[in-house]
Length: 376
Image (cartoon, rainbow, N blue to C red; front, top):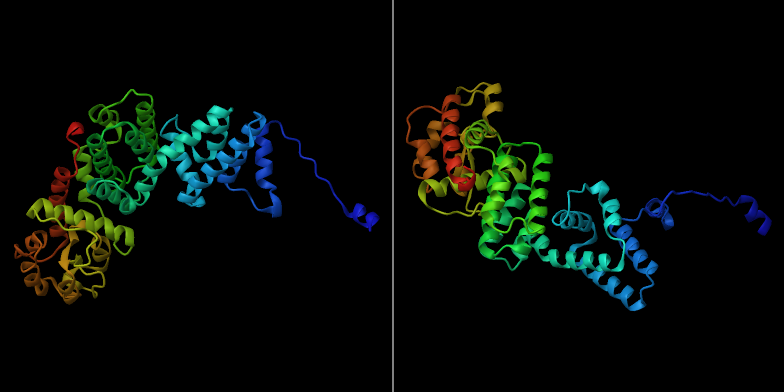
């Protein structure tokens, strides 16, 4: 048996140039061929730092218990994102692919290990509140603003918000959270610009807050001027914006926009998550060929323009269905939403020109609603 095993046994020698590469090899060749997660990789590295320092079993158990508490509250699949957000809220910008290497360079002794651990514990509640606002103990205003960011699926500001939560008072944090929501709507939702520059700007401002260079809301906002879309550009982008509401996230975004326009117009505040109303597409989503004189190409191009959408009570929206505009006008006139009654105020037919004109009007209102006074 020994001869048979030895004849079939192979050894592989892998020579690595430094400790970092050794950990990467360990990650790849883990037991049973299963890759170690970034979470496990960092944990092993931190333990190795303590082990090299000759730390006691007590400190190793302390690290183990605190680490497991953090990972348990996050769920392990969310840990890499949290770690990067935490790190970038205190240090120079690091991409996810470079994060382990960056941390290894900075965390090289016992004190650095426990400093990293304390920092993660300090930031954990803020990260969880941004990810799941309704479960947090934040104020109602902060919960609503964080909920809007989640609706937008915007995460680039998280390092900035972690940094400001640590150092700003409650009023300044709420002000910054609102400004970030406005910037996100202008830059990410309506403008749809590249997020690479935006992310680096947020991280640069977060790093300045962490260093104590920015301590108040006003100076922090001015540092973000480069990612604030100016009014003219915002109005132009808004006036041309189409958002396909068949996607659940997009549907919530449109509801949010329309509810804010309604509040601006009538003073009535509606929750965009309410089941009491729906989005009404004046030119219907399932319009028959030739509806209202629209060609098929026109219908495809204009269906999801913001100017073609409004709010309508759920039952009335269902009854309106695919009816022609003239048949729906009376329902619009009797609607509880001022933004919908406004559609019925004009006798003209529903045309591409009317959709464009209405959306231009909406763009003007939007620039007044979503603005940061210090940056406008």
